[in-house]
Image: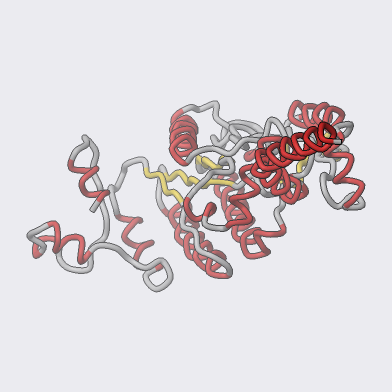
Length: 316
């Protein structure tokens, strides 16, 4: 209903599949009741519909569906089958994805240098020294890695993999990377940019993630963004990729390594330039959050203790 209202109040057009013949649907309620399809059970029909929709016009297809656990892999496989045929059988098709910063990426040398500089700053902070010592190096692992030599020069990597997100998430995102690289190699424009950590409802419902998000900005330049900010920025980058011939996603732009497709236009929220690997600052961030919550009580307790001490000394 919200999408229909938005479309009616705009200059745009909203096109969606319906189960009944469109001419038989007279009211918005009837249209909404018949609207939609199932990526799991209607995959071939969705592909056929999209192959014939708006013929001879530029066509951008975004793969944004997400589900928990193994279902994420399955829905990604369904989207991949549709995108494969669209990119190979239809002209003027562009593919669009949202990458995660919690992944393994090639990064520019400038980002790696910034991570080195940040590490030298943070490793001498008492809080970081204490946590690293108590965890025997498991917490606060150095983010910057040595470059890997290859064709075209040295390549810099960032290990943003989050073990807490599980193997299904990593596999689903890897499948999207493979399709993006293959489609671009065959002449298809691909917009596949990294979106930042965002305080969405689904993420903030997980208490551990919510606590960590509150403390992570201590490790500058790491930042958590509001959904409205992420949506606006990623939409702007998408439009740039689709319309600017010099964009990283344009197949005419030369890359030394195909994975550099994901190195430019990244809105990673500081993950690449942070002193420590993203998967090693979670616990430290939670401790910071609860420490901040406890600070007023500790100050109040300290004031009471000082007052009690003063009263005791004054009476003795």
